[in-house]
Image (cartoon, rainbow, N blue to C red; front, side, top):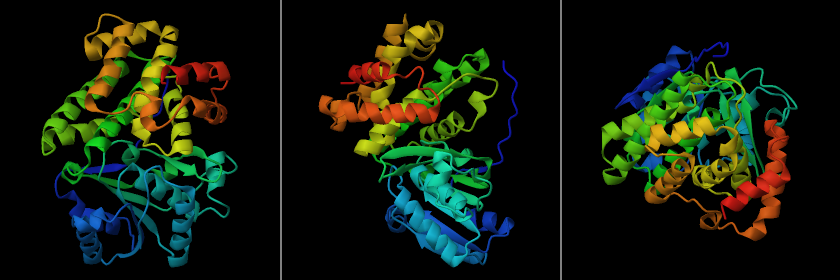
Length: 382
């Protein structure tokens, strides 16, 4: 087990009705004016916007509204929100939505206090040295952004999907009410399941130091996701399944399963970011295509861990059966497993490979993920 320092500063307020306390949370941090970020007008139709605005008003907190944030959040939208935040001199950012809204809010929080263009922070031209306080009310469980210091944004001009990672953008308070996730569509439920599994397996399969305790935590997360996804497909109103799914999603990327591990990388995300940047596919849908293809290429580099996965997650007898079982489960729940299901053809591979190679340099794993390797992985997904 490797040395580590673990500190997660985010307060999670979990359960039904917790969104009514958002005003109190902001007031306790001395916030008096906030940029309220959200995606579609669904939060207005279902009454969540009204609940939030009343809670803020009850604690004397003014809010500036910024909606229209889309899945695979865009740099241009982040820039617009930064201009609004600066113009109104807000002192915090509040996200009401899923991971895309929260990632945008984090980028806005960091970019508002940076003198240059916010994209500098994503390409390593400058570091995040400060950010406005971030708060959120989660309406979709998938990214784990509610309890980490990461954010991913797509630059639509350069067709690059890059991330920032900084302790300055950890949310101060994240409200997770599983009841708010009940209206998540079937498609986005299964995409979310793939996303959580991807967060869990990146270190599990690639780490050079992977304690058995951490492997057991990862397997518990994945088994929980499998069980609760199937329960929710059968009954979307199953609150207990929704709650366990949401908490498993948070645990997959709050840093806990990576404490004491070492030498890991994020190749599935590296490859999928190219699919999202080029073709605007839903992140989880892209991951469910990439993961089995990558596993077929990579498993020989860590056969013992792949055998463990097969046995502990699917009760399978060997590596190949374990990979096939995961792919079959993705097919069963209805998330894509082939590039063609995303509208991506063999003719698209050259541009996709170039984008992935650029990502590989950004992720620091270009030595392993050569042109030949990337082409092989993508061809497994045709």
